[in-house]
Image (cartoon, rainbow, N blue to C red; front, side, top):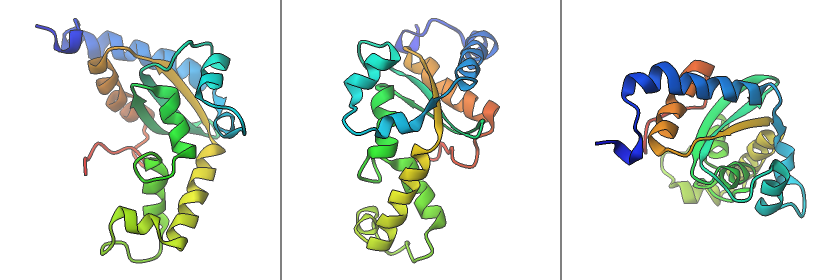
Amino acid sequence: MPIDNCHYCYNELTETVLPEYLKTLKQQIDAPIPMSRFTEKGIGIRTLLKQFGFQSDFPGCYVFIEKEDPIYVGISQKLVTRINQHVNGKSHFSASLAYRMTMESYDGETEQYTRKQLMNMDKFRTLFEQKKKYLSELDVAFIEIDNPVERYLFEIYCAMELDTSRWNTFETH
């Protein structure tokens, strides 16, 4: 019985389906979208979707790119909304990559504080906003992947193939 309506066996996924997704994504990486599009004043999700040629938000995989180098792979059921959250999110939940980057470069004590407490500290918040700005200066490429099994497996496959190990982790908190 298929999981989440995925009718491929594991070997078919790893030998055919995932490599085909990667081939398609690499074509998108060659012509990426500036992340600055997601921070334009007055431009919301609906407008972005229309500009990208979609009627509604969709599930898929995205890659952040710095000077032609992929640095982070993510997936979402609402891909355009999720990309938008990375640069416009207000918390460690919505702008999680910016939060991780902030944690890495923050020179103060963090162990004794909760995430919420850190986000309320001026020095930490300022650095967090700088990391979101950095992300808004990158490029992004994405592809639609409807099936959740394919999407989850592709995220790991893609992160490994594109070597985005600096920022990708699959450790849960």
